[in-house]
Length: 149
Image: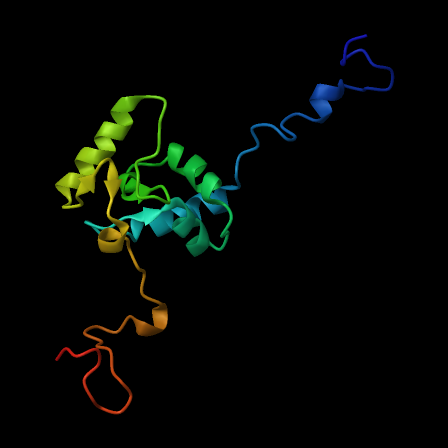
């Protein structure tokens, strides 16, 4: 007996449960939030998939960020997102990986053994309350912070 011809299956089982559990896309709000965060990454810096997910408010959704980046609209600097080790994630076509490497190198991001040095190039977004122009760290006592003037 086929799934569609089961007794009591008006319209068939597949019609009732189309899309449930397999290939369900992330909501458009999630994708647009991911693209907004990625647009904020400055030239010469990178962010990890997990970092983007955390900034969107879904700390454990790094793979979903990767899925959103797969269908990125024009104007989103997709090449500035790398994996947790600073590497360029595997793709079906090698040309996309090469394009990402070339674009990063054109922005001054150096790769060594296929990885970005995250300690140097990882983007650290500034919280909204510290986004003052020319803000400098202080010690609170009017002295010099961290030994620089």
